[in-house]
Length: 409
Image (tube, rainbow, N blue to C red; front, side):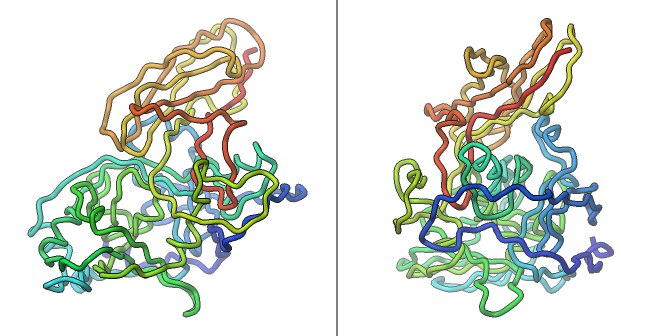
């Protein structure tokens, strides 16, 4: 890690935002088609070749595409990367690095990585990490309405085993004051200019003091990769990744709420039942930040537009997950939604993890087929059909039924 972390691997390139910038959203038609930008595939330190949407800030997707979603745990060297700020340290000295805990506490703390490993009980959680804008490109395909931000496919998600110390235990060591109501967190990434807001996230004190939030120092049994937030990453299982602060350096306990751009403007959706903008509307409305993920499933195999030889036995497979209620079943349709059958659920790695599913299909008849999958969780949440998904300008929380087309010849 020392040799790697001294490398200045961040180039100077395009900065891409993925946020809704204003409290007014206008339904817009998709812009006229132009020559598509094809992102290059580049090998970064600790990563296999990745589809590089931007290198400053780093926005990377696995070159394996959907095939990655046939396995329960995403390898570190293929895990997607999504930063917001262009100024990211290219070297972190663990001898001097400290996690500062301050604010409305009885004792301020300055903790080294060794402190976190030796002074607190180590805990693990297997959890999906998903960008709030994951799959947002499908909004435009289904609704003919453009969205802000990076047009991710299903690329911006992965599942890993995270190990670290409970945030609750760290706060208890500091001694939270009775007047404390919020906890704010931020990391070492910085904006290019002072006028740009820092990436600061906050949560209620009750949420911060639950057992499931951890300050992680390991990912899949190894140090967290540099591009995924080394040396520390805040893990909030079941929540979108915008709250999973990378290179975590400060925890601030607060008596009053501190308004922040990313929490109160950028990563927000309409505060209504559908969390969407009504078609044809152009109005000011109340917002709320995105938080818990929605039930979702993705087809990992076969790939879209695959050509399958007649008589083949196809193991249609993929993953499903939700906000932590647990996946009850995943249904599959081979005829575009006319009929549905149950898939076989694989090993349960925990309520926040990917749940693999599979379905054996005998490709007996030539023709074109539309495969769809739909997950249902244990409290009855079900993925909406593509025509029923509600639109929002940020392109957040997309979870419509996954659809691919294949051909048997």
